Image (cartoon, rainbow, N blue to C red; front, side):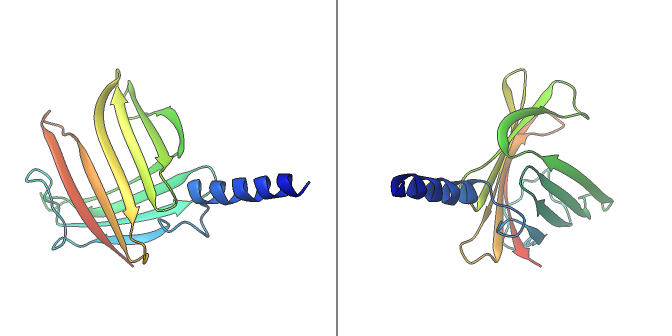
Length: 155
């Protein structure tokens, strides 16, 4: 009996670490890009960027707003399912996204089309919870590879 209780407690702790909820997820909240600390690709020199993560048990709602390199305001919201399963991207026929938690402080998302990697993003919160580092690599609209590291400060 005690062994079963210990196993259940261990599994609960593991699940809490792998799939955090809104109240416990360090990723949840609003983050503003710190351009001075970031390493942006020359074709992705946006002027400003703010992201908001809303985390629930079965989804992560990622909303961004900012000003692109052409000076135009942009915003969008994506619903990610961090369960490791493929989900189609409605705006991009044939593209699927797989999102998963890698521990309690890292969210990883990978996009593929016909089995070919199109893009990969990891969002990692620092141990003190004050900084989010986004590592993004992929193929841009012109078909060129790019990589960048964007550092965000918690708001």
